[in-house]
Image 1 (cartoon, rainbow, N blue to C red):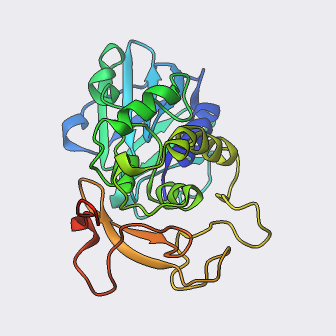
Image 2 (image 1 turned 180 degrees about the horizontal axis):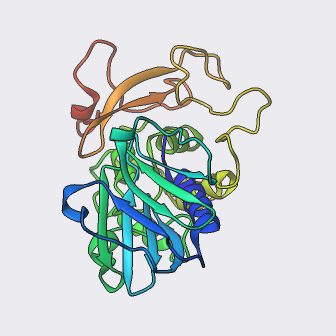
Length: 280
């Protein structure tokens, strides 16, 4: 699942394959850019920004893409068979003399002036893996809406950029609270730890092929994807319910013993509507 660490890895692969090289071919397979030809331009760099990828090319242009749930970039050597999916799922091809980068199922693909990149990514909060990382600002952003469930706030890229559904669940477990706890009710000591903990997890995983948050042999994640298996700490069955992120429902995992607080009842209303009543 593409999160900030996954996108950072994709940017590094693309940068290593393309940066400093002249494009011999570009093929945009979306109607808006069907006539665009970047051949002859040098790729300057590929940079991640949260979950966004910015491929900057000579002449002040940037290819902006976003993977969301299903998108991917694959890099191939000359003569190597393309294997990222069927041809009709290809959205763009960028080729140099010795590498070809192919973007599959990219839900967001646009060509911008590099000077206008802020139009695409200016709304993002501090990037957990970027040079602009600012833990104090990230915490202030999260606290700006104290009634909002913590899980929803963590997924809002305007607060801090790079946390996806996996890290949301793991962070809430490590903080010992449910994803439905209002941000304003997060104990002060745990709120103060949150930005540094999020940064630590993504930093630790940005170079790993398999994401790990536990440090336990044979177990990569504490709760994500584990329902109804027992919690690694207390052996209570891990639960799962949907929680919204502002655009869609996401399967959300938690341990009801290690993470006390508001949560959906089994068979109860959608978790996206769960709110704890005052005094509840």
